[in-house]
Image 1: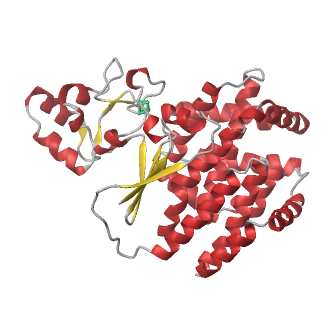
Image 2 (image 1 turned 45 degrees about the vertical axis):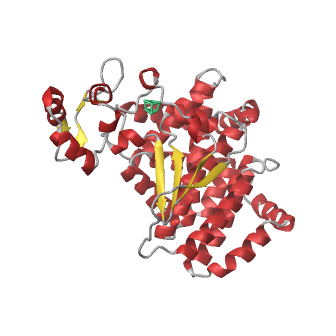
Image 3 (image 1 turned 120 degrees about the vertical axis):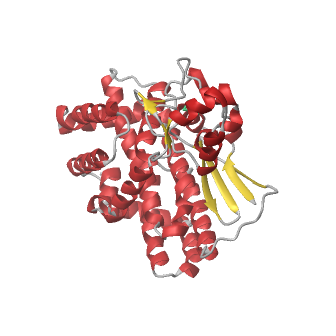
Length: 383
Ligand code: SF4
C-alpha cells in the first residue's frame, strides 16, 4: 500500500510532560473496540483502575476536572507508565497523526491541534513537500470507490498546491484564485464532466488565465465596509459550534469586540494594513496553513463529491486565523510572536477541526450558507 505524508512528518516528537496544552485534557478520548477488550481483561490493581475509569457507555476515558483519568500530576500517562505503550488505545497511539484512508493509499498528516505539530507545520518557510512510499501492507479494495474521480482530485490538488505555493502572488490573490478555480471545477464534478478536468487545468496554468483572473478580481476590491461585515459574519459562525474549552468562546468574544466594535472602520483598515506589513516576512505561515488543510481534507471529496467545500474550509480557516492574529497583535501593543501564533492556530484546530461534529457543521455551512458563496468569500478576501 502507498503512504503519503509531509516531509517533516518524522521530525515530530511528543513533548509529553513539557507540553503547553496536553492532548490528554479538554476532550473525551474515544477508545477503540480492541483496546476496550484489552482493558476488560487486564489483571491486578491496575486492571481494576482501568475498568473503573472508563465510561463504558460512551467508550471513553473518564475525566476529572477536564483531564483524562490517567493523566497524572506530572502530566504523564499512567497507562503508558504502569502497563506499557502497547496498552494505549488507538487514539492515544496515533495522535497527533491523522489518517485519511483511500483505496490502497493512506495519507497521514500531523494534526494542527497539537502545539508541537503546529510548530513543525508553521515553523519553516520551506515550501511544504510530501513523501510517498510503498509498504508491505495488504492491498485493499473499497466497494464503490470511484478511482477515476480520485485521480482527478489528486490532479486538481497538485494544481492547488502550485497556486498556494506561488509566492509571486499575494496570499489574498492565491486564496481567491483557488476558490474561483474550484468553483469552476466543482460544476464539472457535479455534471460528471471529469474528462474536462485535464484541459481546464492546462488552461488555468497559462499566464493569460492569471491576467483574466486579476481583472475579474478587481471588481471585488475597494469594498472595505462589506469586507469587514463579511469577516464578522464568518467569525460569528464559530459560535454555532460545540465548545470544547469554555475559555475559547471568551477569547473569541473579546477579540471580536476588539476588531469589529471598538475600532472604527478607518482604524480597522489601518490596523489591517499595518499588520500585513508587520507580518510580511511571516506570510508563509498562511501558505502552510492552506497547504495543511488542502492536503488533509481535499481528496476526501471522493466520498461526497464536494471538493469546493473542502477548499472553502481551508480558505475560511486561514482567514479567520489571520483575523485572530490581527486582534492579538493589537491586544499586545502591536507585537506578535511565533508562540502567539501557535497558541491561536492549535486552539482553533482543537475547537473547530478536531471535533467530528464541528468539522461536519463547518462543511455543512460551507456548502449551504449564503455567506460562503464564492462572491461573498471574494469580498471577504479582496474587499
Ligand atoms: S498535544 Fe502533542 S506534544 Fe502535547 S502531549 Fe499531546 S501529542 Fe504530545
